[in-house]
Length: 550
Image (cartoon, rainbow, N blue to C red; front, top):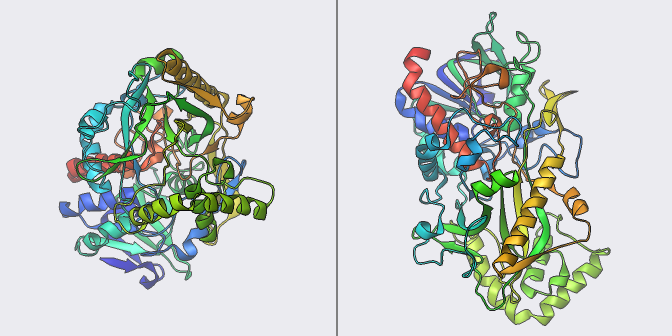
C-alpha cells in the first residue's frame, strides 16, 4: 500500500521486519523480491509518487570542481522510482576482469567472481526490460554481420559486443501497482530519513529516524534495515549517524566516503573508416524489439598488457551545437532542443543569434532531408514505449566522432564528507572532492593510440585527434551524469572496506547496503543494471538467512 509520512503522528513508532530506505531501482527491486516472504516491509521514500517536491533541495551540496562534475542536486531525483525517472536506459553488465584483482588498479578486486553474478544479471534484465542476457552480436542479433566493420578482425580491439537499452523502465511507474497491492508492503512517501540510531554497544541498528517538511519526526523499528538510497545519500546517512560512532556508522576502516568514482567520458578524436565499406552504425533491434548498439572495447589480454582501465567507445554523430557539420537534421534537432529548453552543454560559437542563423542555413539548404528524417525519428522517440535512445546520422565519408566512457581508479582522496552547512531538516549537507587522476587520463590516451594502431595495421581506417594538444583535450573530460560509485566499498576484510560480500555493514548485524556505493571498482558500464543485480543478491541473502537474522 502507498502511504504518506505526513499522516504519521509526531513521535510515533512504526514496526516492521524489514525497513528499506530509498525507493529507486534497488529499493523497489528489494521490496518486489521480499514481498512473498511473509515479512512485514516498510519502504521509505523521501519524495512523492510522481515528483520530488521540497525533498529535491536536500540533495544540494558543495563541490570542489563544478566544471567536471555536475551539482549534487542534479542527475538524481527523489520520487517513487528514484533516478530511474531520469535515466536513458543504457544496460551493460560488468566484465569478468572488473571483478579481479588488477595489479595496476589500486584497491581493485571484488570479494567474489563475475560468474556468481550471471543469474542475478539475468533476473535484472527482467526488471529493466532489456531483453536477453546476451551481449555478443553473433547470438544477440542473429543474421547481423558480427563485426562493426566487415573487414575488421577482433583481437586487441573488439567490435563484436553490444550495449542494450531499457525502454527506459521507470521503476516507480512500472511497479507501483504491484507495491500498492502488496498487503505486507507499506510504501511511505515524503519520508526523508535523517539518522540511523545504533544500539549502545554499536552492534545493531535499533531505529530509523524520519523527519518531514511538516516538522514531524517519527521512527521505524525493524529487524533488518537496508539502505538503498543511492551512492551519495546512503553515505551521507551513515556519516551523519554519529551518536554511537563518532565518525559515522561503518567507518571502522576509514573508507566510508572514500574511493568515490564516476565514469569519465567525452570525445577527443574522430575516426575515419575505410571508404566503400558499410559500417554497422546506429541502433539495431534484437528479436524481442530491444534496441542494441555496437560498441568498441579492448580484450582482457590487451587491458592487462597495456594496463588499461576498462573503457568502451562508440561511433557517434557530430556535436549537435556545431553548425560546421552542415547537416539539416542535426541543426533542426539542436534548435528544437533549445526551443524546448534542453540542456546547453553542446552550444558552440561566440554569438547566440549568429549560431542560430548558421543552423537555419543548414536547415534551408537541406530541408528535404530534415523533412524525411525528423518525423520518423519523432515517432520512434516520442510515440513508442520502447523509444529509440537518440538521433544518429550515418556519415557519408565514413568519419565519425569517437565517444568514450572509462572507469576511474578508486582513489582514497576522491571522497564525500559532511559539510558544516545543514539542510532544511537539520542534516549536514555533503561536500564532494572529485578529481580525474593522471592514471585515468593516461589510460584513455593509451586506448585511443591502440585503436589507431590496430585500424592502421588492418588497413581499416585511422584516428584523428580534435586538437594538437591531446593532454589539453583530456583535461576537459567530465564525470558522467548520475554515476555515483564506491563510497561504501565492499570487502571481505573489514579493514579494507565498509560492507562485506553480502552487503552487510561490517560489525553491524542487521544493516545492509544495496547501492552502487558498494562497488569496489566502477568498470566501464553504466551502473543501473548492476545495481539491480546486486539488490537481487542482497534479497536472496535475506531470503535464505532471515530466520536466523531476525
